[in-house]
Image (cartoon, rainbow, N blue to C red; front, top):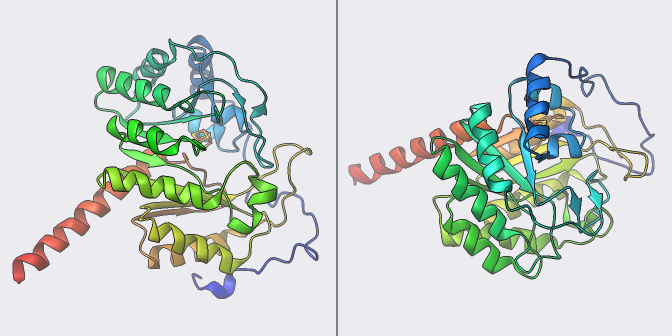
Length: 318
Ligand code: SF4
């Protein structure tokens, strides 16, 4: 059922706190592949958002040797209400990190890699040059690997940071809006909704061939029409790929789950997003920015090629 009548409207005042529903429960990771991925990350001294964010998909992803590397340390200069990464004054940037990321990509045999980072408001370039070095190192060592980056908003340094990263030519540039604008003051207090949208617009204005991607979490108290407005804003910024997943509270110190959105409601949101023209949409309770990112990237690339071929045919008939 893909119509919006299945999408519940959220009433934070009346919604009781719930146990995790059965569609959220995942098995504890125990596989051999999981252990090998974990060991490799330890050996190369790499942080992953999979562990730092306590991602529920870690068993599945690491078994398949998919991990999302988190560069620039394990300490963030922001304190978002939903995020499990520790806040504080980060340490020095590790000059060996780009080489270690490339080594991990080679050893894991990755066709597609996702690189993210903590916020580094303490650095003059917000950490942009480390993203550039990682992309360059990957291109040198594993040229067949496609590269997806998930960056912070580079508050106050956005234009130069984006320009530098776009010149390094990642295949996908992801920056998450995380939630609807009304909830920013409580959920993402250090960020500005329109600044994040502008960042993604800026990527496209420099290089329209780079795919742009953004995501939001559901279950934080957002209303259905607010989610639709975010989709419209993203389409206005020419964002190609939308991800939507359930917010899960990593610890009791973090903001409450207001609602567990049903799989049917996620499917309905996904249908609306596709109708609004996104090239690719991932919408399910366990969707995360980097969940199935390689498969989704391949589908998105095929969708763009099909779109261009259709446009060529139509132009040829004129
Ligand atoms: S969904 Fe992303 S963050 Fe979660 S385990 Fe998989 S790769 Fe890591």
